[in-house]
Image (cartoon, rainbow, N blue to C red):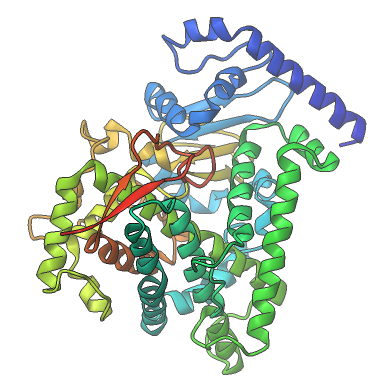
Length: 502
């Protein structure tokens, strides 16, 4: 596309926004009957922009009204035309049953270009090789033990003292628990990958530029899903608006990643981290598949994104839910006391974590309501028809709303909005194995998350340690809302007061 075409497209898009504001009052009247209206020329874009601040809840209402699957129509001259679904039958068909026909699609790499050729963005042989190499470590008990020990050390040496400090100051020290968890998860994930501790959680650390860079990039990625490609590409060309922020964020992230890799290549890692294990496996000619150097760097970036977001986002929403449902928190504490006589939980073995069944169920329930990754992006390689009856042409963008799936009455019943860990526990007292196409917090099918077990290990260690020691309350009057981002963080953070648990 030429520069002139980009300019004209941008001007046309500005006209759409003008028209959107002009008919806003009329839209409000109409949307009493319909969540989203398709208007001439501008399509459904006015309603979308009017609800952009609550995009995930809005998508849920849109899908609920549409029976679980609906077409989103953008302005007639743009490529913003997609099918949105939260139908388990469709999800199973796309992610598992007919997996071979649903790839990332041509738009995915444009929108997620910052992921490079890593495991989440790659396809076919490259993806298979990276997944096989990653699986070599992820399912290894020794590696899981290493992750558990480094996570507990981080909890014991940094997270718990930080919470204690807030308590000792009478909560005069401002504490955003979401930011604390983001820093904690970032440190743990970098340790897992490179054996290097960036120490962003330390009291004396003021450099949070890399952590913030990831958050800014994730916000821009969501915008790219709904803003016409010509507009955001023009912004990137001119280095203005959200794309200027994106460029700076990516530069910060890749600079940090290069520093971590140099650290490992200089022999500073402990050898048990993923980078060290991979190098050792290659040197010993084990069955791990060798991945090209430049792609392996992208893979580590992808795992860094996945690891830090899963842990920090889940912990933040989990603690908030427990404040809203104190009776569930008490049940978790009773279970901890039953498995730890002192009442203050500390990590010992991986087997001990398996005894925390109610805690595991509670984390599953939190993940159902607030999946860290709110959506998935697919496109068919050839014409297809979904189980819902919807026809999808080649390369038609399909967005699966994981957030909406956890809140559909048709999937989870009339109590779908309640935090109810009991729905995950069988009569025998074991965890119920819910199909991934109904509970896709860790994706589903061949691309299901390899780090699921490791994520639960880390989540249980942190949750048990914090809940058994502290009572955490969100500052009164602070509104907790999901952010308009591809990662389901809290929009305005989570300022809290910390008290001892008695």
